[in-house]
Image (cartoon, rainbow, N blue to C red; front, side, top):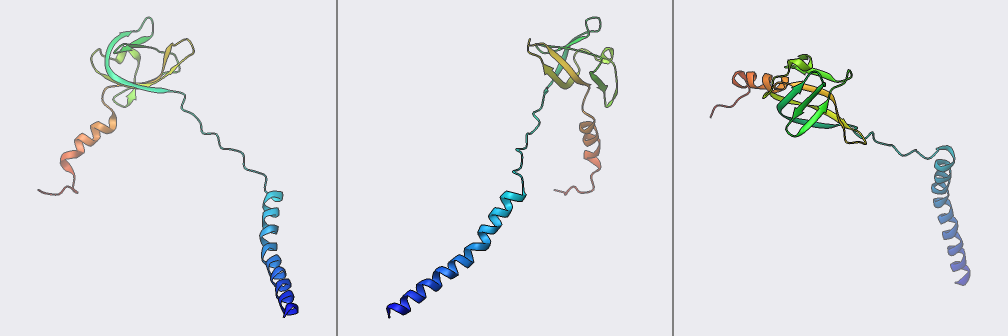
Length: 138
């Protein structure tokens, strides 16, 4: 009886070793052949957005004011009006304006893009609202 028990215990240990061996080999292969993946750094947005009514434009100082904020305009600033290229002088005080800007360490706001007028997709969706073939009659 003891001999049978010892044989059974030895066979059980042998079976456990065989089952565990492929898992251990796979773990070693994974760590030895594959370098650890470098952490992915997500690019943080380096700009903020603004929108509102245009309060003032100064083409000499190359600035525009929306509400209480004044944005400096550079040669890198992309300006559009109604979806088409424009200049700072194309802006009209009181019209809708939006865009993106960067804030430097000194607190200066520099516009990276400016969009005068309504957004192009809003106008298109307003025009298409009455002609939709997918609307449901109520």
